[in-house]
Length: 126
Image 1 (spheres, rainbow, N blue to C red):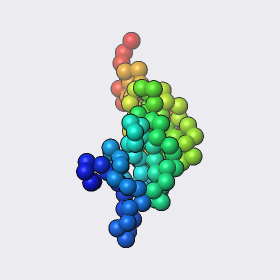
Image 2 (image 1 turned 45 degrees about the horizontal axis):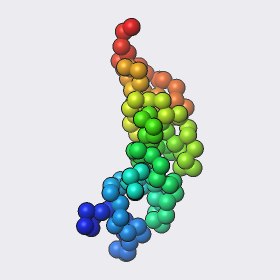
Image 3 (image 1 turned 180 degrees about the horizontal axis):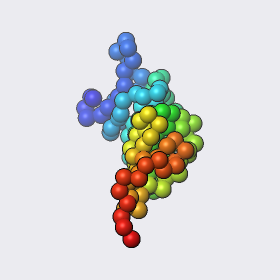
């Protein structure tokens, strides 16, 4: 961090992305989530935008997918910025060992990488 802004350096100490970011996450699977001009996107290890800032939140890539938030809903993208699991959740977390925790419609679930519910934790009685 320099003057309240985040940037990235390479192994030799040279900037690959200058300190101009409001927030930044760690590199995972070759990409790092960054907050730039009010939106989240991803940079690659060369400091170039791999996925242009367009989300209100981005998580790190885990198991080939990353959780993102757009238009108030959470979903998952792949490294090509293709939507793999539509943003339909009220909240979602990173994948871990092929499963991710999500919350939708007053219920908590674990889903697989295809978006199929594999375990229901809590579901509000109607």
